[in-house]
Image (cartoon, rainbow, N blue to C red; front, side, top):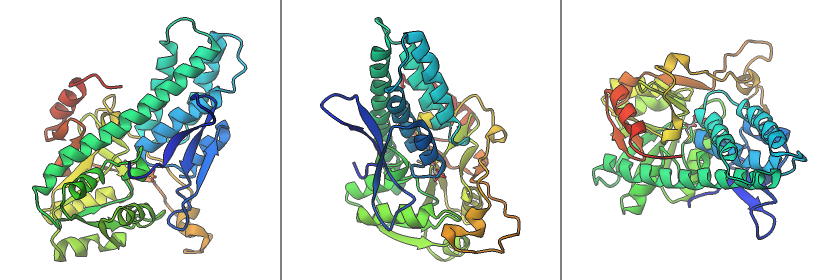
Length: 360
Ligand code: MRU
């Protein structure tokens, strides 16, 4: 594992009792600090404030968080416990609206406890919750490794190939290996020397603070650029491909990801650079026909006016701060998944992908 942004910290030999353990990503790259939580509002707040962030990582955090909170339940019957768990799950799932992995992980955990075998008592259901959370976490590790292996093909064996990415879809955004960065780690493990341009990713700098930190730490050559430099870079330098993660992929391939991803995709198309998305099945929302239905999180204006506490615009002016945008499927060359690289037309390749195997 490259990094451990979200894990289960058990307090003894058994899985329970325990807490969800998070790297506080708001403090990176200055310091690597962990927090351990088992309080509902503290876990929800950690997801809202991006202590833990990235679609698969917030799914894992919600799954562990649900188990951490529900272990303290005083419910006297299985029915009362299930009702409490559903309420806790709904509260966690409402922390951020765009990444479908959050809702998916909560629903999967609740489904597992509802389906748990007899005897159904609060004690057995608490155990079922943590077992499902561990399963989600371990599955995500495997999915990311498989994405890396399939994405390795994009390098075509070329050493020192440059790629560009946006935001952080690395180990920090998942259970530890990444989606968009997984092919880069796989290339490095295969003896290639990939070079990565990391968009800084305004306004919260996940590219500069997090992607650059984890790639540098792993010994991958990384160059940070301001978001507004991508056009000049693609024009002047040789960049093999662009690759980003996803927060939600609609049935037709339209993809929500960090604000600025759409702009990078347009630039890549203009410069003839193939643009890839990397994501596991848990990021696909087959209920949405296209990207128009994806809810986009709006964040506080002060993230723009007072970035990291420094006044960067007049305090009284308005600021528009959507956290994500939607890249139309027509700009995407392929979606790198745990089952292979999906190609257009995505409506068909995504349907085949989702039908292709028992997962979850
Ligand atoms: O607001 P964030 O930092 O949670 O946004 C994260 C992204 O947009 C990632 O690219 C996405 O979640 C994929 S993570 C593998």
